[in-house]
Image 1: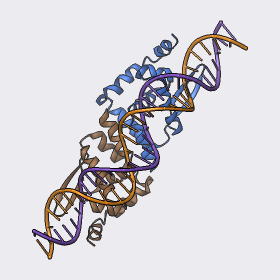
Image 2: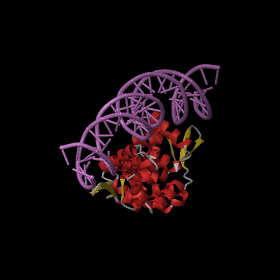
Image 3: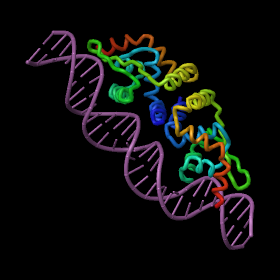
Image 4: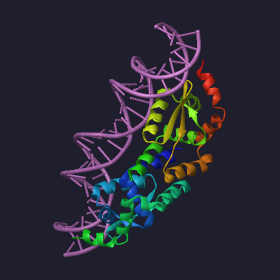
Length: 113
Length: 113
DNA sequence: TTCTTATGTACTCATATGAGTATATAAGAA
DNA sequence: TTCTTATATACTCATATGAGTACATAAGAA
């Protein structure tokens, strides 16, 4: 039961929801997520930490970057995310995130300057 | 977008989730909900008020009782509730609520003593 | 009118939450 | 080794949240 309510609490924060929906589409590193969402790095890192602690994402180092990946075990959770994605047109912010997500690499380069 | 995150915040509280799932099955008055869930009346009333303010339930007086009824406009919201109900076996608390809900009238009588 | 009864609300308190800033850390580059 | 760079964490603060208790209200009964 708490798995469920805790999951909903995760989704109730806009930043976390954006991150989850991004990772639903593609594995991303922290600076890509920052670039895409326009949110400050410590904020993104903190939310990622919470997602990691809850077991909803996995992190993996690749060279100097740490990539995050969706890791949703519960079928209900996965299907709820799917359901949101199916209505993505109703949520312009999520939609534009995903658009930018397609050229995520450029945020890595931006990060290098 | 906030419609969505606010909806998830509603679901992130166990008591509210229980109430919503109950009302998904059947129109109920406050004392029935209290009886079924075992939660104190002010607590139930406050959560119902929040649900009403968010437009997720309707209230209607019938004689001395006020009945609450699910009133979910957004399709996404409704489908998420459906999805939870479909997995009801995974959530014993919700399941036993619904069992008790079938004899809800007895909680009205209990209320009269 | 007065009394019940069902429900709603006000108040207080403890706790949780999220933001922002500064700083720590860890790995690679030089 | 020292310097960068990417990411994580600590700290502080303001605000939100939920619980519990007491009380208010509104409608029907007497």
